[in-house]
Image (cartoon, rainbow over all chains, first blue to last red; front, side, top):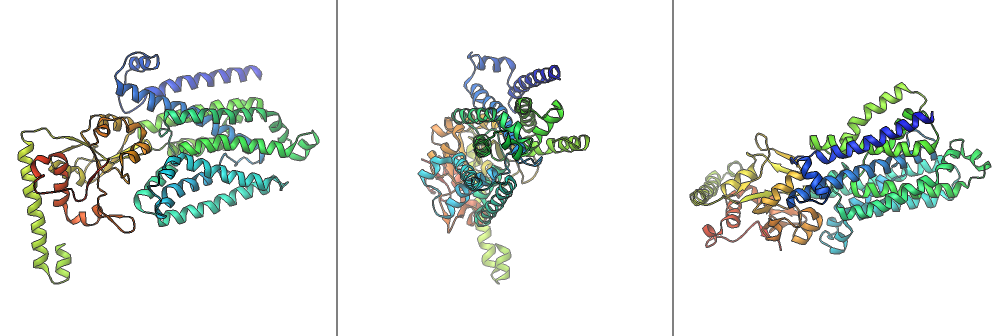
Length: 334
Length: 184
């Protein structure tokens, strides 16, 4: 079994490298491999080609790896915490909170006559989304300190999400065409709107989130046995919950803030990892999920570039048949 | 315009207005055509990106046609009729690098707003040369744009605005920008 896992991990790592290279080569502008290599190794190339390779392709490919790993790992944590195979990174309202932040920024500010405010524009869409996501998660986390039953928190997260969606719909209903279009496009998700400067903010946040995720591998394994049993094994449930929520805020919150909500990956990839590795141990599942998430989002990014479609539509169109196939083939995936 | 005039029993006045707009449009476009027969048409980029996609008009789109009549050469996509299609941000960057003018930049009123929303396009030549114009000179309460309201029935004024931007030497004596404004 251990030998099989090693082979699978090697294959997945190889896939990440190959797909990363493929993602760098695909784009609407024809750029030769020699030029790509010259830019990456610091050689000479014309400025516009350098700009396309560094500012667009490299940033996008790195973002695909980071977002894929981050969303998948936070999905895995949510599925184990809530003991629910339908849980994903957005189950606690991260996506709805981010949408509210962006809706207030894009739709609400012009309605209040604050559209041109320099203070507001300095926050940017990403800042507004991050604040929205963090605010909703902080609220859920504060309530969860008083509630023992984890299912109540799940319901609470979904209710907060619905309430926030209603507010967003009111803002959409009252907004004018240009702002509405910007908001709808944001909800479609995109890996290509991230600048190299923003990437320098995203990397530490995602690395911190993944570090916390690795730190809770043992508690996650104990939670598989149920909270009462985990408690008898000496697990501090409250502290574990807080760490998992913090990790989700850093992972899903950051990715959603900069890329918009990206569906399917966080829900489906942990199931694919379980099927592929035939294992429920988080010491195996955590890295497997991260690598599979990176592979999946790199594939989706390549397809979205070839078809000039939003990445969110590709993740759903490519992902849903896979999930249905996995569910039909393996009835006991959790 | 003529249909509304007919309904209100003023068909003759309606036809007179319509014909004066049509005559004005045709005479301006003929003057521009004569001028551009011996000069180069500037390359024009329109719209702004929505995240990593940029929507451009097709060759027969009304905006591409009016830019062409005004003596410009609009970057377009393939497609029939009055359609628009998204292009990849890489292609858009390539076009923007070689554009002489950038028009219709959404809700941006200053170059700073434009470059903070689209940092990748901050260093393109057209922005550095400050040759960016938006159709937001006239607004209607609360958040409407007069370009998309009265502009629909005054293509002759839009044509003169665009000619003023691309070839001021032809029209500067008789026209000042009406719907368009230069971003600073």
